[in-house]
Length: 256
Image (cartoon, rainbow, N blue to C red; front, side, top):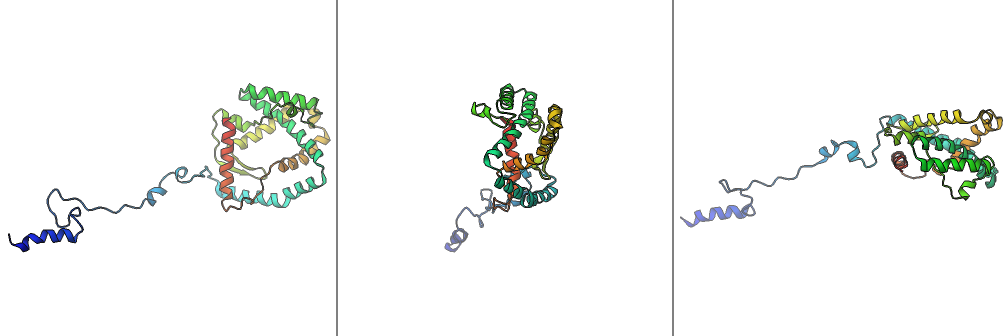
């Protein structure tokens, strides 16, 4: 074979960067060309939202919920927080504590009922003890004697009871003035109100002082005891963070 003929395969291999590329090779042993990796973005966005979004919460009414979130923020900024600030400015801390104790003691009623519905004796028994002690020795709940006796306060509502028995939370909801919730807990709120009115003695319900305080002092006290303030996170994703945080907190409460 002439020398020129023997150099042709060698030059071909060197020109293509090595024998593995096989541009000049032939036959069954030739390797296939290396393919560039395909971009995976289309595949990523085809995944379910709960997979691609770490803060995913089912929110089919998101547009309406966002508007209600903005409404609640303005209601908070222009009405509720100024009223709370004025209440705290003119009311001594001792009196505010007595007001909180009174309404928290009434809340033991729903906690006891829901603990019974969940068959949780370990929560129902101390809750009943707290209510009896604070309503008598604590002078209608004005003084939290039960906590001084190291009887822990529980917190159960009908939304938690439904979740305990396997009812799904349903879609996320933002309730006017009441804030973040979901369909199950929204129904639970109504059930708690009805149950409380049913078991509360008529002598208390029809008392003018109680009626006035339940529509004035109670919502003010309830808002004062919640440290959250709208737009204090400084995050442009506050809506998503609140939605996720509230949802996960309720899951933890139900699993306790």
